[in-house]
Image (cartoon, rainbow over all chains, first blue to last red; front, top):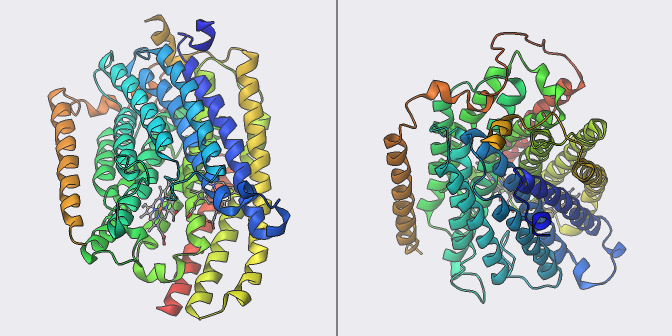
Length: 464
Length: 88
Ligand code: HEM
Ligand code: HEM
């Protein structure tokens, strides 16, 4: 029984985190689709409180960020850290315990939010007790990573380990501070200061929680899939430090229209533009060396998804500095344009890398992918779906922005948005189907237990 | 409102202190010494084929799709810029 619940077999916790991620992806996508349907035809939804937009939206976002993205990253880092440190994961049973615990925490997110129990703070809607639950999980993961690093047989830390370890420390502190955990009843501070703190948190969720873990996986998978070393490891470390220094100050670019001190706005805009530096340090490092080995990216559907994630990252990070400029935000802020950015960022970049990492690492974790054809179908469905989501929201956003600046009234503008929302809904259907294929493929892969190409890096680790 | 400057300074100093600690640790543990070997860490167990078989860039649907997405991203930015400049 203990061995079934908390096995000691290397890789078991990673695999279970991957099952977790695929499950919550489908749940989160479904809530996204429901939210999109509300915007197309509000009357279609049953008149029940849990189906109101104000509850669907935070459920959608938090389930996807915590349930899908973080679960996939946790599974990935539990494999990558021991692999490049050439050792075993320090406490596999504890990691397996973390999987169960994490799922209980995740279950409480939709339970609380659909029930209307919320702190009304973007990306931090969950009540205090759930916040503490998340913090404990992150602390356990950080403990596993640091104890594994301490037992490493390879003295040099590969860049992925820097990103993973740094990212977990950041996740812990940023989450605690951003949720104002010392004030349980409201989870907030006071006045405008609280908004600044809130967006310090909100931006770091994407920049220092999601981004480092996704980059860490890409830094492991792209060189490995193409059998090509990085362009420069020193450059990758430079990118890591630049990200840490610059990302932390950008939060206020979400508040350029708000009464925030001018100096803080200036700092946030300057740092937003300077973010180009770590972004390109990463992209040159993984793109340059593989230019004549690109064929190998196609051969592995996991690597293809990860690489596609870096392409979306490129677009996201061209948009980012651009819409940090106040004159651009005059048009784009408060419109769906930003929602389009959010989706190519969190889904195109963070999500494609998460799904690709699962497909790429499962064989290394000793399981042959159930169906590569299904995986490829999923890839195309999701690529088309996300493109549709991106284009429809971007243009809806531009229409909203234009209309606003021209003084259009809402009643005339709203009908014009309808068709774009319809395209978003159809794209959402494609994505939900893709999510269905994904959970089927991942669960079949793991439940049928057919051993795959074999634990490559772990072979030595397993016998060590 | 400018009281936020205190919080910002506290945040800046703790963050910097942690970063300095990590850098000093890394220097003392010789983390920056052998950067060339570090590039190969994810590959060490794979059969070496540096410079070996180089699959040509196949111009399949995947490549066109990715190039298309890149182009789309740029076009969308250009369109947005036009709208912004019209209202500039
Ligand atoms: C160079 C890097 C980036 C810069 C400068 C940047 C800049 C921005 C700015 C200025 C906004 C707010 C726009 C507005 O409200 O008018 C924003 C929103 C957002 N960004 Fe980015 N971004 C960058 C990269 C990323 C990445 C890598 C991710 C995800 C992994 C991301 C996720 C988001 C999300 C989710 C939002 C929506 C926030 C909300 O309003 O709910 N961004 N970004
Ligand atoms: C893994 C995939 C996805 C992730 C990580 C994700 C994440 C997010 C995030 C961070 C936001 C907040 C954006 C902002 O306020 O700027 C958001 C909003 C939203 N998403 Fe998603 N999303 C995903 C997929 C989907 C899908 C497939 C749909 C369905 C069509 C969808 C529909 C929506 C809707 C309707 C909103 C609310 C937009 C608004 O408030 O105007 N999302 N999502």
